[in-house]
Length: 465
Image 1 (cartoon, rainbow, N blue to C red):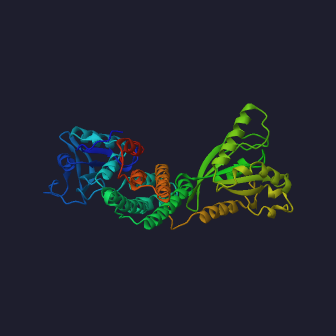
Image 2: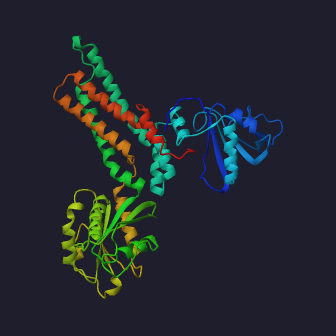
Image 3: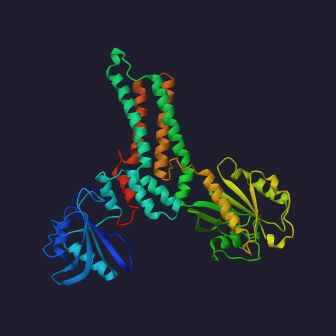
């Protein structure tokens, strides 16, 4: 993406492409009002569009000497009180694809150019309407697919995460200034920064950064969907269970063991959280090369999942069988924040539920019938319980990989400063790590950035945003 500070006036379709009731075409830049004055005739007599007030909407016709193109509504937003901080105009026209294209052609003929992906939001960032992490939250808000991912994007867009980063960075800046002042008076051996206060500050910052880094495991899955792997031996009803959970025939169901050869994924929203279900190949000794690949991918999905549903045939597998199977892959669930729920399927064929499963004190055990859709609601309830027990509502969650990496680098630098302070290093040796920590925190909010970073971020936006 081309990063520019030029004064071009840009335009683009801001609603979804295709036919609809209405379409919105957005303009931003210094020529917005001049151009709209040339092509728009307001219904209100005597109205000069160049003098019209900001944040007003006007009915009229759009066209040129060749004729009227459409009857439209024009919304006016004067700088700096607009989304981009520039003069912005939004044209609401009828949603015909033909009309949309002709309006854009009309704007191009007046000297406007098509906006690049994310260029409206880039201009908002460049004009300090919000910082870089808030700009990224705009894209997350547009892409939100559940109440939880929406809430996370809103919290970040409103500056909750930014304020925390700014506070950490400012505390480091204040102390760095004192350390560097000592360097200016090194010959006089003057101390401006109290070392005990500095140690307490570093301990506080390390704790804050560590908490933010730790929150990424939850924040990222809320943003992208919580991965749930459905695993178990062949022919225990994993695919049937997936189809029931999704309420559609997503996976092929057969009495033949090993029917599922590859991971099948789909997403549903339960209680405001997006769960990404993954049906995997049955765990057994593979009988051919294709099944071998499928089972290898099953283990990969187990390692990636936040929650594992281990499905077993309640009519065929005893407590001892299930216990032995779980022992085989306990290494994938131990010590890495994954939760396992045992699902005993085919309970419709049982007269009495099997005993012994209460001994799995760390695992909840549910008995269901995928075929008859019995107790399926219990699975949804347990999935919600897992997420809600994990999430801390008043804690800022990190959901962006770029932010996560910057926080890790900042933490490494702050830890080096702490270690240097403990070892009694001179101030000039600590300032390098202090500046490194400040740099990486600044990367998050955009106080420190490059065209390469901006290009990578905003190129992922849609063109009209």
